[in-house]
Image (cartoon, rainbow, N blue to C red):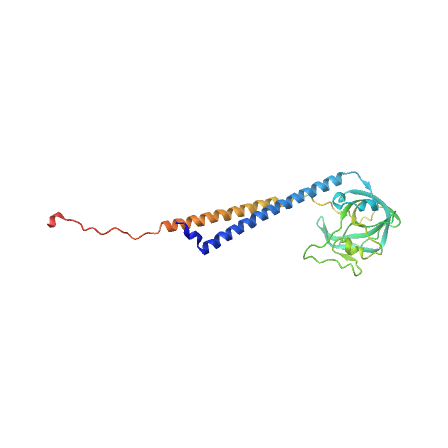
Length: 257
């Protein structure tokens, strides 16, 4: 009765449904892994932000980036006025602008890049404070272009950059850069009023859980659709009328005899 389910077109239908279910379930688990990564990152950022401020030196910067990101540090040094960079196409609190970035040379000679803050479009980029400065900042890992995104070419002189790419920026200096950079929180002497501290990131979990639930629902829908398709075909085949095998019987009329 069910042998029709083994016909080539039905086998193709079974494989299509099975493939769709497997792919959707894997996508659901992928979203759950993304959620777990996001939660882990948020927990790390929160714990590091709440940790005590530590002094910054070259030795600290050689540590594991995962153990250092968003740690608050204090440092003393002097800015290099040139080269100065601007991270373009930045939006902060609904305002478009760019971030201004300079290198800070620490007392031990270490050269570390500093994102001094956000400057609105139309406002000239201010030069860094002269002389010795004391900064309170958070540590950040260097950024890099994702797949399909244009990258900054560090082999030529740069002024406008897309991100704080320490590999590209490192080619602009004669000495190596520290493997992490700073986002400025406070400075003595203070930055000009036109410079705003980079906003703290929103630590949301994103839509990963809802996406995972959606993929699970889609996979269940495919399974339910397969069941309905099979049952309908079985019902249609069972309901097909078969020709009658009963022989006609001559009616007997007693009055005719």
